[in-house]
Image (tube, rainbow, N blue to C red; front, side, top):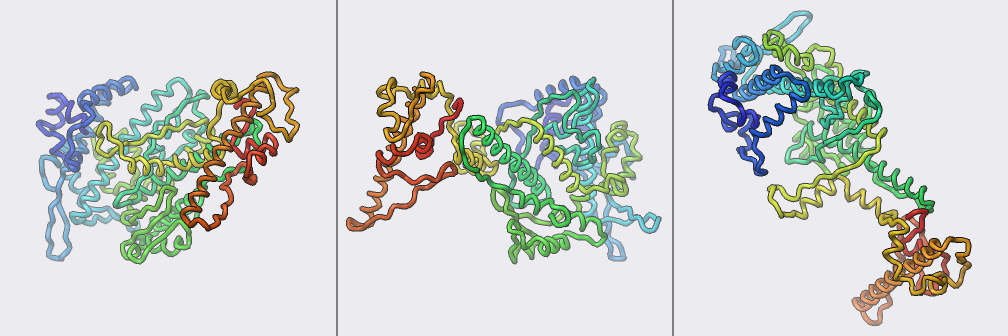
Length: 569
């Protein structure tokens, strides 16, 4: 929107009725009252780059022109207004006002003004094979207009995504899965998933994919969209945790290190709460969408009845009154409102608006209308939530078949200001995206891993006499290094010395801590030593003297000091 309004030529402005309009003149772009970019990038330059990229992707000039026309139609549609018609029966109806915006929309969509007005101010009801037209009030007409805008824009997105995928995969025997374009499978979400698209491995074999997702979302008001986004993050967080754990295990096995199970948070219970068949929130929502008497209020009551006992679901008395509920996600509690969930989950364009698109003589409308979810069409057999869940499963299966690498992007401040670091903001982001949990899992094992040669080159000065075992290995055990190479002998001596140094430092700190606690409680008070905090390596008793430490065998000394000598690290 912003780029086109900045870059449109005089000819385009005349053809598209833009004239002197700017972003300030459209409801779709003026709600934030922010029109200038603080990053110094010019929207006009970005628009030119986008058009050039579309041409590279085999979009013809006419197709690009028609897409820009559709975008402008969406802009003007956001400016259309309705007026109330009073009737003697007391039932209010409304009319679409004949304004510059509504006339422009009719012309740009290739429909008559009368058909546009009728589609937005009346509802088509199918009763026993008969068709009944029922008038809408202003609020309902505005909702119908929003549904038309969303459907047209969403269908255009699917059209573009399919054309890009077809261009990328030209000559490779097929179209790649739509979820690989970084849109979280949004094109799959709207139009269903065909067998061809469900292929985990794209045509041609090896591939590199980039998945760009929203982070965990929690706002003052959280709705169906936030649940879907947070459901995605829960799913990918589970995959991330399992992947990190799997890599840890493989690393330890390669190094020949004895280790114990490293626990990591499993959020399967949250995923079950949201999407478990027959009892999950999305399933309960689908059930309310199927029946004619389903409402958002009944959906909320059904949640309270079926989910209250779940330990991740909570609802207070005030939330029950306001049709709200809370879910404890891995990143914290989020309160959701259950308003408008049924309408969003159905995601259907009213039949009257479908008839409007059928009457259009605009070529692009004819090409994109196949992506529109409409009342009575076969695609409505799957709700939006069901399609989202299915496409997420396909995405998860695809990620599981690859070797993923993760890039965590953190925003240092909310003002986009340079050299400004907001610690609270950063900590929240680290927590929400699971980095703190990943660090915790790593710390439970051995996070610092030196290759043998690097370790030796850095720490060799610690050994006073690298040619002899005495002073470095234990005098209480047969730790002969005769069967090792010279490099291996020196490495073992060094690791043994480092382990002793680390233990001594930790022990000194421990004694000072005990002394400080004794002084705090009083001179004559005996401080009872607490058992040393252990991790998942080995629950060995704390040696109280260096002599006790050296009485341990080599592996035990290393374990007590938090050191392991692997095959290569």
